[in-house]
Amino acid sequence: VAAPPAPPRSEVLTSDPANNVSEYIYSKMGTNLHLQPDHPICVIKQAIYDYFEATAPGLFKPFDGLHPVVSARANFDEVLVPADHVSRSPNDTYYVNADTVLRCHTSAHQTELLRAGHSGFLVTGDVYRRDSIDATHYPVFHQMEGVRVFGPEDWAAAGMGATEFAEKELKGALEGMARALFGDGIECRWVDAYFPFTEPSYELEIFFNGKWLEVLGCGVMQQSILDANHPGGSGKKAWAFGLGLERLAMVLFGISDIRLFWSGDERFLRQFKRGDLKARFKPYSKFPPCLKDMAFWVSPNFTENNLCELVRGIGGDLVEEVTLIDEFTNSKTGRTSNCYRITYRSMERSLTDEEVNSLQDRVRKAVSEELGVELR
Ligand code: PHE
Image 1 (cartoon, helix red, strand yellow):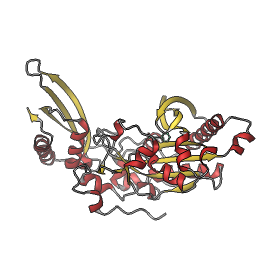
Image 2 (cartoon, helix red, strand yellow; image 1 turned 180 degrees about the horizontal axis):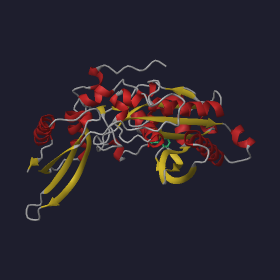
Image 3 (cartoon, helix red, strand yellow; image 1 turned 180 degrees about the vertical axis):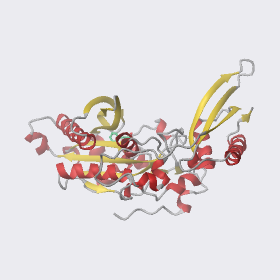
Image 4 (tube, helix red, strand yellow; image 1 turned 90 degrees about the vertical axis):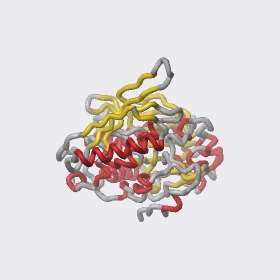
């Protein structure tokens, strides 16, 4: 597959009043970790593709190069995300303009691929979400979506009802995938969940390293999505799943910090190879962190996601974590004070005091100028 290039700058960083995409986010577009051979994100992707190809030859068509800039319609409306759902908020999603977003999940491609007549597909790509900052959250990550459509002959042959059949197929396929990745002995359990686009909906959890871990979300596709989009329409039934590749790779390979995927460091990359699911990441060094606290009176429209966006924009991948460590409201004035701790740490080298102080000075200046808060 040809890697999709980054879209032109002018198409993403527009002056539209609804635009909330930053230079930092734009700089990540077109990297396509899922298409870099031997990158752990690509290794997991390929292992899942290989599993589906081995168990159902030719049934799942892979799509690795779909453009991450999509319509809000496809990302939300067409997959039945309610008008008041939090994920639509510009605090959670990157908007290019009011009608166009950076996809926040690969489910954004379900309807176009159904309309194109596909009955089985796997979509892998970069997805974008505004969020807090810590070792497992990064504003860009990679998801894989899987969809399989059945016809009446399929559930008739099994002597089952349509939904019951789709659910059984779904669970069988995904438990098989979990075994293919984590080994035959892996313990799985199904937890009831909610997604607007599936009913019933489940999360798959696996018991790994002594803990139950959520691996993916899935369910039987809402019939109205199928009816409105698939040429076979109302006679069909489908299942869908979506999973985060970083999360799977971190669990399977023991990768401790999500920024490592983006570092390009040879000491990281050389530890992984296509087809090798047995690799366990050996940390090569851990440089000392540098902690900086910052207290301010919040403004009415202050949000943690906005703060994190701003800190990332200045500190880039040197920011490891942003945590609220203290919060109180003055009973006389009613004003609320937050104290945030920013942890700076490079994965490649020791940071100097001057460098961190200068980043922190810029952060302090920007929060007071751009977030309307009052530093204490
Ligand atoms: N899109 C969901 C998410 O990002 C995952 C999902 C996909 C769930 C398909 C069900 C079916 O969390």
